[in-house]
Length: 254
Image 1 (cartoon, rainbow, N blue to C red):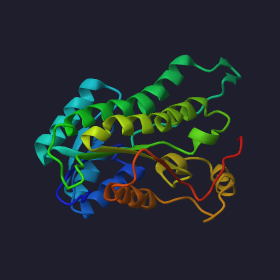
Image 2 (tube, rainbow, N blue to C red):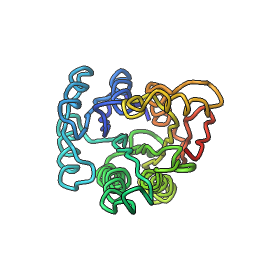
Image 3 (cartoon, rainbow, N blue to C red):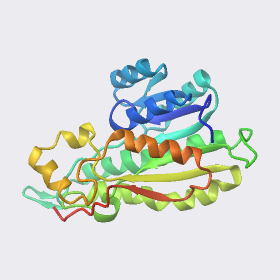
Image 4 (cartoon, rainbow, N blue to C red):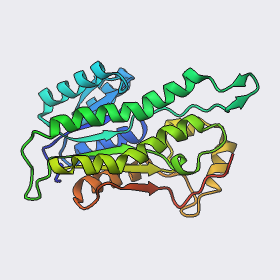
């Protein structure tokens, strides 16, 4: 799908990979709506790229519907959804103060997994009734963001890994179901990307993580995620797949 002139929505677009993807989409000619729980961050990125911003809690049905409706009214029917919103707190299953807090686990699942599904189901419903944009019958593309932690989560990442594993698990069934509408569903599973989330960790933790990366021996860059996302949108044969973007890293237990 050619992104020029199409309406695209990026959740978690106020920072990190989401913000960089919003920038690349706008540069390629898309009309971009930046969604983020942090309204100020969303507005700053939107102002930079000539887009529009919406405060959005992806795990809340009313909030998600309002943001998608606003994006459609401002930029036209949404054809592309990038699900980059997420949180990555850590906690041990059996900690010094007792068992893993159940509400904490539920929050991570609610934001990362249910939030991604919420946006997917709402956007796909709108896309399904649109006219195809090309001769292949393509109507839309949804790209979800997982993590290599879906495959080799570290100690303290039970909730985070479960949430990202759920995103990987729903990719193929979603792609199979939405194929009849001409909607593709793809997941990108980044490794160690230099986002604010990771850069806030102590330097020794960052160094230990980079040491497990085969090549290149560094943190990934947000623009490398955005370049892959734009290629996925452009390449109609990429569908129902989770693509690792990780420099062949394999996370150690801790």
